[in-house]
Image (cartoon, rainbow, N blue to C red; front, top):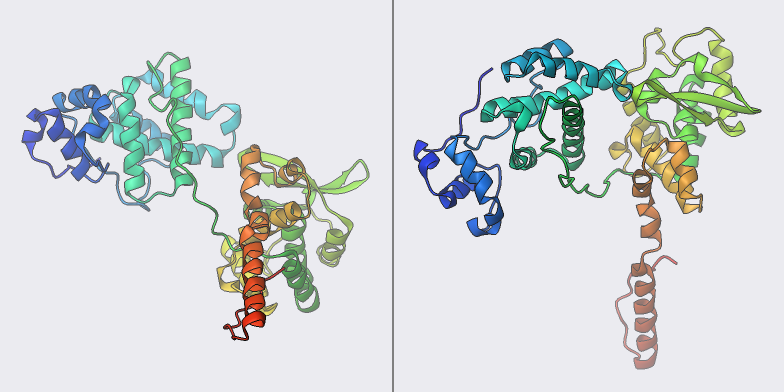
Length: 394
């Protein structure tokens, strides 16, 4: 594996700590206002400098991960100097309950491989990496433009792996323990109002095939993710305690049971009658092949444009899930009820969909109405004519 060499002079290794701080700053990994701002880290930085461990940047965003399979991860671990016991512990970690599905394992392998790349590039001892290195790694992820969610996901994966290594006696500590998480930016996902969702379904029912109608019914009626829709099978439809239900496949190989309400079932029924009861994928293309993400993505935008919904070209499949969650919260459905529908483990995730309700209750509207009323009163009293602005929504 080739290692990217930092463009720094060898003299930096022998330089005072202050010069080392400057070297770290100009490397692009971190940005410092002044060396004295991080005086608490001088001991760790001195250790790094004395051992010749120089700053290094991560490869650009979008670069293929160093390992994508268990075999490649094992090879990378050996290259990084890991003992056989570390490989055995890693196998146990990947086989544990939360990582039982192959897709989940593949995701964790990719995330951990980037840390192994960093460890090797920096010349570190895997079982006893200084805490400072985890912070530098986090800064390097930020420097190449990884989104906060991506950085948090990678940090959580590596931290989980280290916790297992510590339990197995193969690491002295977890360098990511207690690390601050990256602050997520407010969602910029375009979403639809309840009226627009009705408009979208009305157009679909009037102009589209039973299959397309059923696809949209599932997306809007269950607020499922695109992955759940693509993995849905006829066998996942059923009944429970008198309710029509569907078991949505979700991350980790689990099934999330939700109710199919009578209206959603009514929209789906023409397709179910046409499809029949044969086991297998619930939705396929006209040629019998599995649906692709790109097809469903384009379908949502096409239908939205045909239904004359604004910003149709900026919508996504997630926009529908976002829209359903927002509409429920706006109609005062309890947070825990919406959380259960969406299948969120953490209520804070559900809370992110409440921002639209906050916009509707913004004091800016009330302030605008007061300004408008004040200007109208002054106009009537003075006989002067103010420029008439738009009517402020009530």
